[in-house]
Image 1 (spheres, rainbow, N blue to C red):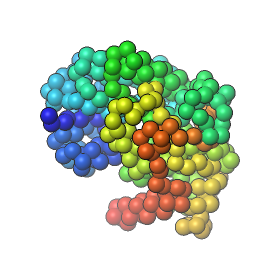
Image 2 (cartoon, rainbow, N blue to C red):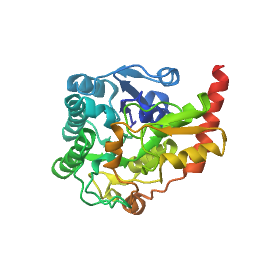
Image 3 (spheres, rainbow, N blue to C red):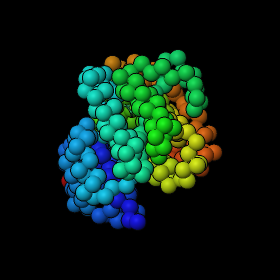
Image 4 (cartoon, rainbow, N blue to C red):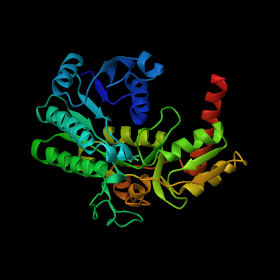
Length: 319
Ligand code: SER
């Protein structure tokens, strides 16, 4: 049987690159992109696109039936910083979109679901270093509470309704193709743009705030890998810890200075500092490594070199 995939939230930071990667793999017409707004030209012109509000279950069902979708990647969500400002909107979007998709799994209208969780499921009482897969969680942010609840529901739907849902706790994600929006780890993307455009960056986190991070290619690789794994190898049905690197703003600034010696950084922590302080600084991802062979390719040096060279190329083309 032919496979048709639906990406919800296809125009966001992860969704854009995930859609393009899946289109390359399965064919443009087999990957239906959807979002509440239109995305960049490459995405819009490379295959089918539908405007979809992820909380609208009827509209979602229509798309599933029309395209004979068997696999859904639910990438739509309100991230940590924005969610603190709009708690009810965040809860509504993050939870109802998940229920809509899980219920399609329960009704056997789709075969497989990917739903991203986050390091935000952890909280101030979680061990900060090498945070284990199973540990105290107690998230203290709106976003983290929604992700932890989501994880519980994923496991519940797997156990009780045999829904094949798979999930990863993404760290902060760094990419040059699409900007992140409303997250606490966004500084690690903004800093590269500002370094090239202005030679300086005013960071909203303190210089010594260590957070787990990952380059987008690794995040996409992990997503495809967990979705392709045999069902019996997916032993964690809440969400897997996933790691690549950990660094603080000061480290990334020094790393950029190796390419742009005059680059300067200033620090002006805002409300996002408290969010970052509640999260782990490094993650133990041994379960993902053991169960489905996870291994990251990008460290900070490689990330910085890739970010700067691609953004430089983009800038030159735009000028
Ligand atoms: N990158 C996300 C955020 O900062 C964490 O999942 O909100």
